[in-house]
Every structure is written in C-alpha cells, then in structure tokens.
Length: 126
Image (cartoon, rainbow, N blue to C red):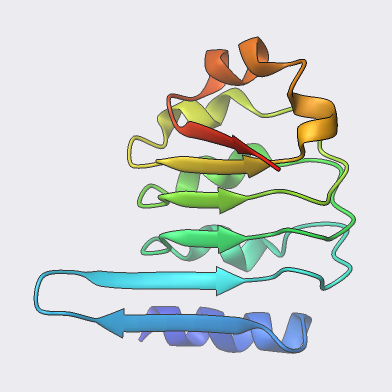
C-alpha cells in the first residue's frame, strides 16, 4: 500500500511514468521508468521506494545522483545514460544487490577506475 501511495505522488510530479510490478512464484520485480521526462532532479519520493529493483533515469537533464540512492537497498539495475552526471556518489557502494549500471561511453570509458572505486556492479557503457 505504501508503494501505491508513493507511486501516486510520483504521478503528480511527473506525467507518463511507467511503473511495472510483476509477481512470480519465486520473486517480485519492481521497475520505475523515468526516462525522457526532462528531469533536472530525481523526485525525492523515488528514494522511499524500498522494493525498487530497476530504475531508468536515462535521457534526462540530471547533473547528479544524490547520496539518497543508498536508500534503494534492493536496486539491481540503474540506467543513467543521456544525462550530465560526471560523479557517482560513494553511497552506491552500499547497494549490495546492484548488478548493472548503464552509463554514457563518451565520458565514462576514460573513468572506469573511478566507477570501480564506488561499485562492484557491472558497468555497461553505451
């Protein structure tokens, strides 16, 4: 119920948000697609979505990934491509389930050592 309230709040902030929640016999998957919404900041309500597993923030106008990202303890996939993010917070290291981070090749291919200091997730540059 709490997630439904948070999703409702997000819908008021950003139009055309895609939230997918599927249940299977063994696990539950929650995805939030905030891609191409012209966001300059990530809505703070996103960081209250504790069950979030996939967060797509691609193709926005984000300049930073806030330290509150650490609140998304179950996050597995994070897509940051198409933004102006040139710094990743150390708090990413606290996301033990994070498996993949999508980043822009143009900037990050020369900075892989920086990323590896912050996360053990697989880095996918496109």
